[in-house]
Image 1: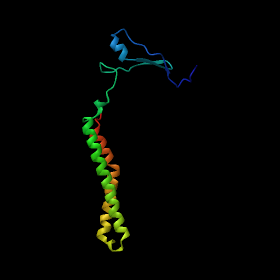
Image 2: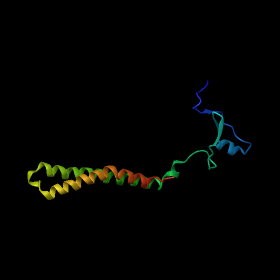
Image 3: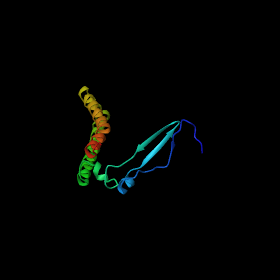
Image 4: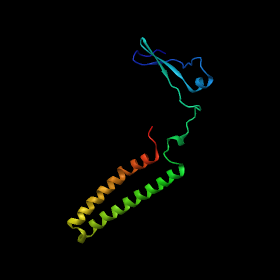
Length: 130
């Protein structure tokens, strides 16, 4: 099959004359485009080729579960409590004062922080950025 000139043709991977572990963990690819050839090395810097998911967690699995439960509790209570504040102010005519509208404004801002910032904070507390 012939590709147009702007597509890359990937040739079969090949390895150099090195140790068996390096041959198993490293794959070299030749990419041809027009007249140029690019050789890419896709090696792993580990003795075992399998990836362990625990390496990307900041804490143990137990502590990660505790973080998830705590953040879920804060998320649920924050959403429910702030919606109750909004509902009370808008359903009762006596509660529609300037001060209570300010409190409703704070409740809306708190809901936005909970929805947009809390999940990102949980992810940064659980995972390590590499």
